[in-house]
Image (cartoon, rainbow, N blue to C red):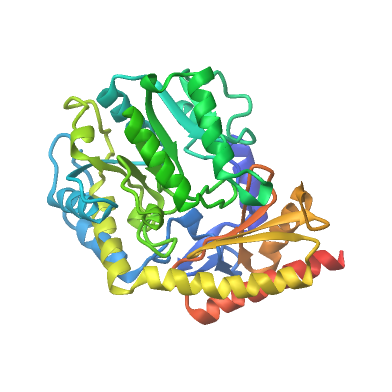
Amino acid sequence: MENQQLQARKQQAMAQGMGNLYPLYVAKADNAEIWDVEGNRYVDFAAGIAVTNTGHLHPKVKAAVSAQLEQFSHTCAMVTPYESMVTLAERLNALTPGESQKKSIFLTTGAEAVENAVKIARAHTGRPGVIAFQGGFHGRTNLTMGLTGKIAPYKAGFGPFPGEIYHAPYPVAFHGRSEAECLAALESLFHCDIEPSRVAAIIIEPIQGEGGFYIAPPSFMQALRRLCDQHGIVLICDEIQTGFARTGKLFATEFSGIEPDMITLAKGLAGGFPLAAVTGKAEIMDAANPGGLGGTYAGSPLGCVAANAVLEVIEQEQLCHKALAIGEYLTGRLERLKSIYPQWVGEIRVQGAMVAMELVEQGDADKPNPALTKAIIGQAQAHGLVLLACGVRANVIRILAPLTIPQDTLAEGADKLEAIFAAVSAG
């Protein structure tokens, strides 16, 4: 079966809303490489959108899941639980930022984690309001779409959204949006839209994912912490894309030196198996009554054993250190691209192995270049590269290579990216 034949079948069988970036049908994947049904090989610069941080089918993750399958695949953790889930909760409670006593819950998807974090915050505070940020992405469910600060393609045509959700600007120096202006906008929101005594939570990505890989300065995160403490607001850090060594620390929030009240986790947590979590301060996490949290597949035993293996791999293979090395190498390669195409590459943003470049016209930050971005993504498959775009203005190329990628494969991927730019430049 060929890629185009499968794509035709998919278009007939599946709703168009569940699209796919490439007509590339995977037959096999190993570490940082993918092979399609036609036998073509690709360097993976996407990692399933920061899911396979430990690479495709890491031997330790595969062994853990294989061993679990010999025992049982599902019992429902809310009926008859199992040790691997308890062990994972203990580990996350110890590893997430801050010294407070913590507790965790497990779910299946990142959107579920965000929804449950909001539920817990409302139960704890008795307040309805939630503040999120422009450009943020928190999921595709109704509540998380409401929290998301990007219209196309996530929110267009799907309203109305739940009430008592408010959006504040996120600091982006490249676009002239300062921390001071964003904090002033929050104060204005408190005066004009909702009093702080009615706000249950503020939710923020320490680095915006879909929004464009904009990095919140530590001082801004610290100011949010003070603001939340002042008004009794729960601070939720959404680390679904940034977590599990992706940024050079286990969690990106660590760069700011703050302790969030809750942290939402998914993607890289279980190395390719569906698992999500909320970890937070024990007195907040216990606000929900028994039975108020969970789900049929929440805390899947396959996901839990995979996640325990992922945490061991991160520590044993020093993946935080490797993430920093990947970022340093790619910074040099992207700076080279910027020197060749200064009219196109507006800014390079790097935090560990969370790497992006914003594409513009004539070197002008105020002139986004989504057409160029689309052209580069469109050339990637032909050059044997899996590559992603993002950004509120659809003009950011992001690189999320597995943290286990060999150096020669990383260099090969960077070579392919340079070749794509050259091909697009040649017309």
